[in-house]
Image (tube, rainbow, N blue to C red):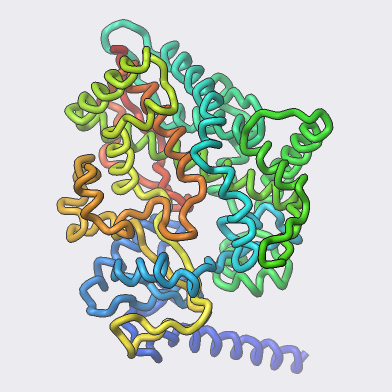
Length: 506
């Protein structure tokens, strides 16, 4: 018993020493930083009472005038370089990308197959998969999926017309819920070939599992934070992070869908079709002689899973926030509707792929919404070797150091966007975009690891917005909450409760 007590004391002392030494990392280097909390690091309040966006805003505003291009940060127990200089951010994302190609995220293809998607993978496997998937997101492939999205959007418009009577005063609609139903049906159809019909049947397993993937954890906070802080060790220990019911649901769904399509040689020209084609090609020999291994069912399921998550939540939230702002700015809404109706009239009233691209002001409104409401707060990268910061020979980002680029904070920096809390689509006029460095607007990232599904996300959001604005006027009502409150448990910017707006037919 005495030996056991001594052993526990020894192990506890060693762990305490290692944690203390870890938290002295930036102090030893003389890099500015805030003292970390022993458990949360510099993420105090994370998943409790603060959204991660606010944590990054405050940290960025405190250190952006420090004179250093990056400052120290502790993402839970993991030391990270928090980039406050957009020029350094550009080097990391683009110019010196070869040294920052990895994200350093947890993935475990053996035990947790849904985590081996393109967003998480690193190194050679990421490069191969990106190379294989890129052709599935070209403008040509978007045109193939366009009719499918239009079909869902027309059903969306019909459901909305049923809910909004033609009488004066219209109806009060919880817009966030309706947008989520729309994008769930779009992604369900394009990714899985399933008629989800959540527009008319709101509570479905498909929708429920998607929501769980964003807000629920497989483990308690302690183990989850361990996995985030030490992803390599967690993978060696064969740990998993995906909730079991979410894992079972999506793996079964993908297995059944692939089996049916391969057996019947059934084609829908959707994302699932394209992945099945890649799977059936098997191993591929590249020009340099390297062999790109075949995609198995687990890897295929992971790509469909992340396509669904990224497509349904981010697009529905962006549209919701956009309508929330348009309801408060009737002049912008009127100008946008005028453009939509004018372009539609020029195309015989039909919403085509070409006419959506012609709606320039719609693109500006969409871009400004993504600036003001940055769904994914930051970009992460990992240094593959020691990196001397250009212009600062005394500053070195050591190998394996995690990089945090706080996109949400850049988007609200008054030096980059004067009066940053004001909703102003003119910030994204052709002239202003041309004068702005691309790294100052990062909702889809930048460089070789930017969002591969950007075209699809923009397409479905613009279609949904055009369908609604061509039929309805949106305004505030007594139930509209100003300002919005945000959910600290969500990994993306999600509001608490609904977004209620008044809709009237035009």
